[in-house]
Picture 1 (cartoon, helix red, strand yellow):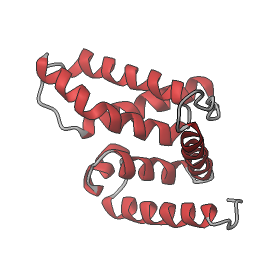
Picture 2 (tube, one colour):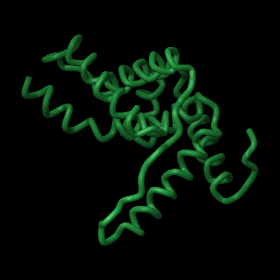
Picture 3 (cartoon, one colour):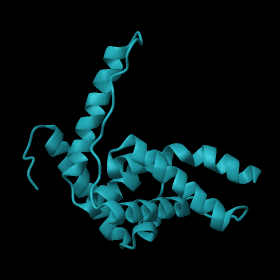
Length: 160
């Protein structure tokens, strides 16, 4: 169990980041993160498994949620109040919101592979294993998604 706890501490930020990029909702990402580790502990506790398995479980938990609700909630958040650098936090949050909005304009496949590439520290081969795509297809989708995000953030075409 000690190894499972340290693995959780090591991976929770990456898995949460992946989920935030997928759905853009902090509370939903936390819920799916919790579900991910519950599923992991239920099936794989004490076993030596690759970190990519956590992203597969998180991906499946996200898909399960999406099937049940068919609609993702928008990013919501209150500005930091009372903090000395509240303005900085607000600017960071606004920029993060812009990136999440831009990611929402990507296709589901592009958003998924880009989220995994940015959040997981997985190789393209491992991302291919998680998503069921070929490694070459993962590389192409990540490249195209990055180009599209850059175009959107620079004020390019916002239509898909």
